Amino acid sequence: MLYVKNVPNGERVLRVVAGSLAAAAGLLAVGGTAGVLLAASAAGIVASGLFGFCPMCAMAGRRLDKAKKHGAL
Image 1 (cartoon, rainbow, N blue to C red):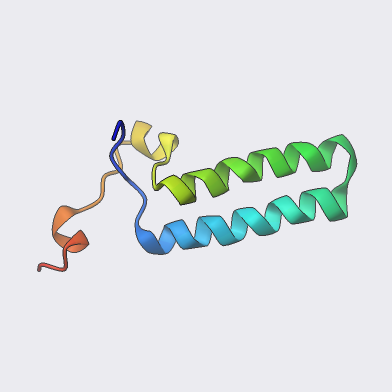
Image 2: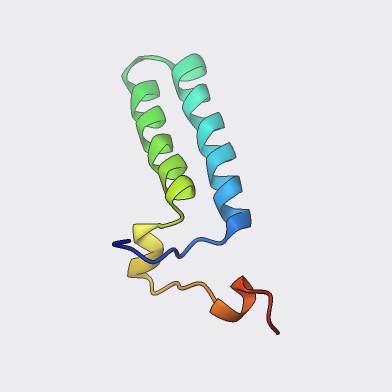
């Protein structure tokens, strides 16, 4: 794997749901060029949720805590 996941599971689900809703709203409610641009940017949010890696979070130095990931205290 070429990247280290830096988005926790709960946030990943939220990103997929919110990004899907934003893409649908962009295509259905806004329409036109603005709607397509909104849907394309929402697709990036969905992708970061699906892959578990956010480039902006990586630039900010965000990392997942390994102890919390495996359930240890």
